[in-house]
Every structure is written in structure tokens, then in C-alpha cells.
Amino acid sequence: KTPIIIDTDPGIDDVIAITAALFAKELDVKLITTVGGNVGIENTTTNAVNLVNFLGKDTPVARGADQPLLKKLVSAAKVHGESGVGGYHFEAKENRTLLSTKHAVEELRDAILYSNEPITLVPIGPLTNIALLLKTYPEVKSNIKEIVLMGGAAKGGNVTPVAEFNMFVDPHAAKIVFDEQISIVMCGLDVTLQTRISTDDIKEIAGHGKVGEMVSQMLSYYDSPSSTETEMSIHDLSTIFYLTRPELFTLKRATVNVVTEGEASGCTITHYNEEGNVQVGLDVDVEEFRREFIATFMKVYGM
Ligand code: BDR
Ligand code: CA
Image 1 (tube, rainbow, N blue to C red):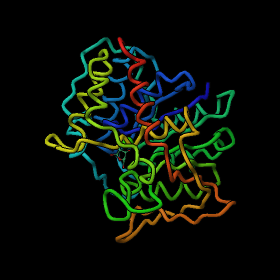
Image 2: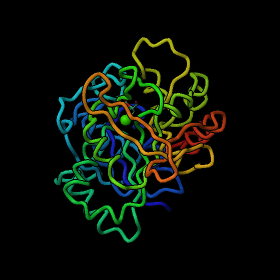
Image 3: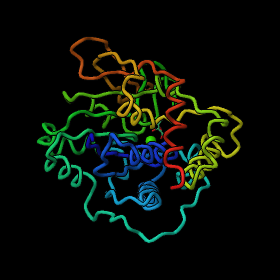
Image 4: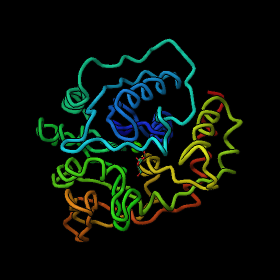
């Protein structure tokens, strides 16, 4: 099993990605760290803890940065609801997950340094915690296998015409991470906007146990409570499917520069070259992705 750590701001698509990861036979989720992003840190942390409890897992959760490095947090409560999980309420359950008393950056450091095997980091929110980690404890770098992240775009944006949300929220952190000579797989909008899940797909999993019900209830909110869209992108899930089904993705090697100021703030500029440390996801087998989504949530049926 590939040991991974998920850094996240749940967030509806984050919840779906974490769920898929916790049930993937190929992955061993060692730690979940939270960051302010889609909603504030209190809610993203509560959502992460509640989710792990709800799924009957005991993955540790650690709370991280509440604000981006140099900017004020811009959240996405319009897309994910004020709580971050649409209108969904996790059933109250005994809290079996130990929410760490340490900061996420300290937990990340320990988990990476003391791991026997190199760790794959999977950031699916703003990169604040990861940037703090790499700057504070650069010694972790030698035990990071790669970073598989959701964020950025070779073309376009979803918050501004040129910036994707996770990059836009903390462009300075993103710059720090991309500038390190660490191997990065970037699942940006170029792939995630292609991976559309339809309301019919969601109906297929809705009747399948409490997990299917949770996912379908959250997705019925995703984008806005009154959304009439019949297809949606579950952005963060691409990172997990990249790890379990890499053959579905087409990547191209590049160097990525992040714009930190002005109108283009948060824009990821890709320079394709064979020596680049980033593999930019450009294409994905959309049909197979859809099948994998349904199969994944059918499997956790009865949960
Ligand atoms: C990213 O922004 C967030 O709203 C999602 O959770 C995802 O990580 C997509 O741009
Ligand atoms: Ca996210």
C-alpha cells in the first residue's frame, strides 16, 4: 500500500476524495491535516473529524493553518455551504478519532520523518500547511516520495479567468511548493473540469448504504443550493484516482511558476520541458473515471 497524507479543507469534493482514499486497497492514509480554505479552519477540522468517525476509521486528524501566509482567507461557502458540507449533518457518534493537540505542521513533520517508507503528500486545499512544512522542516523533503495535488491549471481558472481556487487563496504558499525541487503531479482544472459526474450517476449510488446517501446528499448541494447543473466536477477526487488508476491520466512534464501579485494572482504558468519537476495532468479517460466513481462508492455499500 502507498502511504499517503491528505492535507485538506473539507469541502464537499474533499469529503468524497477522503472517503475514496480511506477505502482504497492501494492506499494507506497515515494522517489527515486540515487547512482554512473552502470554509474556516474550525469547520474544515470538524468536518474531517466527523467524516473519519462516520466512516468508522481511526486516521488521526491535525488542525493546521487558519489563514493563508500573506493574504486574508477567501472562502468558497457559496459552493460548499456555510458548514462546508452542504446541508449534510453527520450523525452524532462517539468521537473515536483523536484530534491531535499538535499543529498540523508538527504532525506532518513527525509522520514524514519517522515513516519507514517515503510518503506521498496529497494536498487538496490551499497549500499553506505544506509551504510552512517545507520551509520550517526542510529535512522532510528526503522522505517525500511525491506531491500529488489538486490545484492550478495550464489554461484558465475558476475564481478568476486565470486562477484556480486553491492557488488563488494562497498563491505565496503555492509558489513555495512549486519552487521546491520536489516531484509534483498537478491535477488541475485541465483534468478536473473534464471529469463530470451526472445527477444520474449520483442516483445510482444514492441507495447504496449510508456512504452513498451522504455523498448524494452533499452533491445535491454542491455548487449552490439551487444549482440546476446536471453534471459536476468532483475536483479533489482526481488526486486519489491518479494514485489508484494512474493509467487514466495523461501528464506532461513542466516547470510551474505561480503568480503572487496583481490581477493574475494565483495563475500557474506552465513551461513544458523534460527537466521540470511537475507533471501536469492534461487529459483523463472521462468514461473510465465515471465508472470508477460509481464502482468506488458501490464498494463501500452497506457501510
Ligand atoms: C478546488 O477548490 C475547492 O473549492 C475544491 O474543494 C477544490 O479543492 C477546486 O478549484
Ligand atoms: Ca479542496
